[in-house]
Amino acid sequence: MIYLLILIIILLILIVVFFWTLHFLRLEIKEILVKDSGRFWNIPECDISQSIDIRGHHLRIFNNGGEAFHDMLREITAAKRYIFLESYIFRHDRVGRVFKKLLIKKAREGVAVYVVFDGIGNLFVPHDFWRKLTRAGAQVFEYGSIRSFLDYFDSKKWIRDHRKMLIIDDKVAFIGGINIGREYEKRWRDTHLKIEGSTVQNIKKIFIDFWNDHKKKKIEISGEWVDDENIKIYHNNASANQFPIRKAYLDLINGAASNLYLTSSYFVPDEGTMAALINASNRGVNVEIILPERSDVWIAQFATFSLIERLLRFGVKIHLYRKTMIHSKMATADHARSIIGSANLDNRSLRRNYEIIAEIKDSKFAFEIERMFECDKRNCHSLNLSQWIHRPKSRIFWENFFGLFRNYL
Image 1 (cartoon, rainbow, N blue to C red):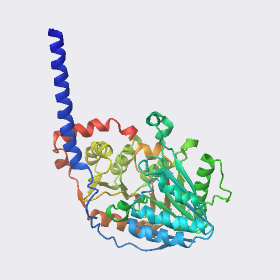
Image 2 (image 1 turned 180 degrees about the vertical axis):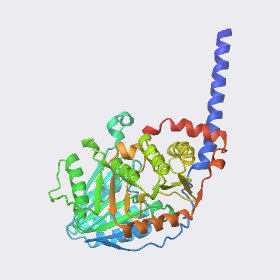
Image 3 (image 1 turned 45 degrees about the horizontal axis):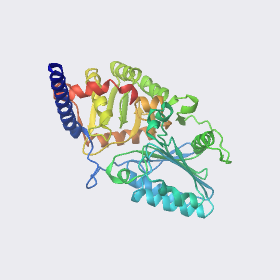
Image 4 (image 1 turned 180 degrees about the horizontal axis):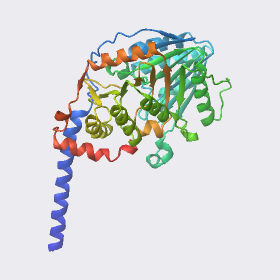
């Protein structure tokens, strides 16, 4: 009888500890989770060039989803031959319905329409959402679909298609961080890139190769790779175990001589990348990083915060973007080289997911990225080491705890 009583007491203690822990974790999460409801935030305007010409290419940078969506819909409307659209998230909200309605119209006009979306990114999108699109003649592919609870334990399902790409008629391509959805229109701060020129062929080939690797019904449109020293496209091919994007980022960081500016929505770098950032700061490079103060992925945010003190101690400047989520993935160094794409500086983007980035070697383009970075800093608060190390002990505990799982984030 005494043993049963002891067992009951132990169980009661464990239950109390569990709910006590859950309660305080919930309070910590509340402090770092983005409030993605209610009115749209008034994201500060950034005065950047609307267009940049680089040796046969015409580029445009978008720093908000509203302008990017408007231009994307305009280009889709003008499509004559084909539309290739790939998006990690394709919401069934007002923005998603506008895109779907126009894609249906173009498919009925005889334009070849191909759409790829990710199964996890669109886990709660009803399959009926795609029915009218397929009935209109469009080809739709859900990558990595989740059909049962056991799928979550399939290591192959851990590979996600995190790319955001739109390619139209060999003429224009869009890549970057902007998914299709209402929060990306006005509420979140994000970055997208429009490319016109021969490099569009490379982005087109990446889409076609991905489709043909995974679908029995192949895309017959040809795609050829074009080499260009000024605009290079890097893409992770998870099925072939090829992940060149990490090397592209490391080359940028290791090659920096004067300045290095990074913006990352989910910043959980591996030790090699952390060492490269610290080494850059140690050799006199002005290293500055913009991260979200509040995130939509709280586990990743705790893991991010576990790394900040170490970076601050080595002179890296950290700025936290306020009020809303900053979802951009971009970098620039030495007023000359820049990166924009879908890849975050985390293990998932650099070693697991399908991702795509563009590296642009041009001083005019780098100048505009720097202007955008400075504009974003006006909506940030910069971290101070002496203040940061005195944040609540409970916060430090959870940061270090979830930091243990950084290689899986």
